[in-house]
Length: 269
Image (cartoon, rainbow, N blue to C red; front, side, top):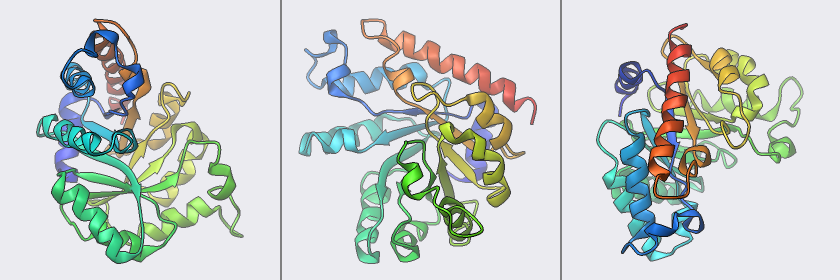
């Protein structure tokens, strides 16, 4: 999906919601456990219920890798089930020496046909370059994350700036606004104004809204740009809004609420 197509979808749906399919087998409603593939049935119902309200789905691969071969098969089935027209993100946080990253890029961009993958910048440009070489795909680099441990390294002073700021400014020169995004956590909303000074035109993938307590209002106020520039992810708040037969309907209600709120923010841009 190109930047132009993504912006058009956001405009058409008046939503910049990304639904995280970080499905925990231990939290699936009991009535699905008798299905041949309970996790896939759960994912299907969530996708069907939320697709009117979102423009993207993000699959955290750890939840699937933990199931071994069956998990990888489930991941593939889930990706294939997501309809065309939605940005499909592999939240894999990869990044290694060049030839290894090339294999990771092939895995997610060719074998599993994702549109985007998250990567870690710690090892430098050669660890990210193989992903960026796919001009028709998106590389989403960890910038400022929402976890408590972000303070251990990301917020370290490098003299005139924090380390995460150095990451943003340096990495932004490796790609373009057409193939490069940054992860910026919603719980770090106080930094969004500064982030926009450093990367004024790039899309930001924003986790941390919902269960983690991030403010959609603050993220939108400081993060939105004329070309939108935001994908806000919600996972647990949507996936586990209900735990009985009506779980998909409750997930749809939460997704619709997010979408409606986002439409209000988009009207001000």
